[in-house]
Length: 297
Image (cartoon, rainbow, N blue to C red; front, side, top):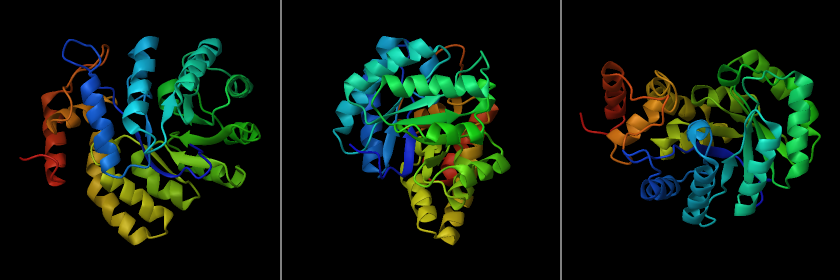
């Protein structure tokens, strides 16, 4: 499936686990069907929200395989494949590519804090090793590395690097990026709460956390922005903002998985070092979800 016209709302899927810590394959299948039935534009398994850092390679590949099989070509599947060891990232990306995904989302290398030249060379090596379209992912709050606009512009000249998921949190940097990237290079919001301004600046959508819980509403908000219907989009933004915020009251994906468990879609199970959220925060989350009629009070 071509990603030339990719836009809209993609869900950064959680990875459901059973209470014994094993993958919950049936819950994952249900989540995929729920997302597609609610009109999501594309799916992104095995990213940060999917707890990719604690998946074994076999589990990572199995999650992608299940999502692909369950999606049945109804929406594009863009799989996470990132890390801080370029050779290992390439190996994982090639194995994910062999499964038949439509594209890759690859986070900047974390912990080893590469220079801008190191980031450029990392992504260029990845792009040369696979044929898939690649979306680079900038989230310095997680990685301690900030992929700067000029480096993104350099990367945009590589044929199969098609876009960026931007979660730097700095609207001035995002504005600079929007001004500098060439026409056709795709900028996605990596932060639900600023999807509206990012699209207003020229972005094409969001890779979303909150759409795990409210795929129809977040897809509609994104669609309205893309159509320039900002008054209606602002109305939805006001409705969803509290849930967007509370999804990050503790480390992602702790709250969103708790929310999905409250909705009865998954068991609430995490991989250490992530742990269940505290009860006060859980109460706030439940109340926000009740306001959206996702659960009963």
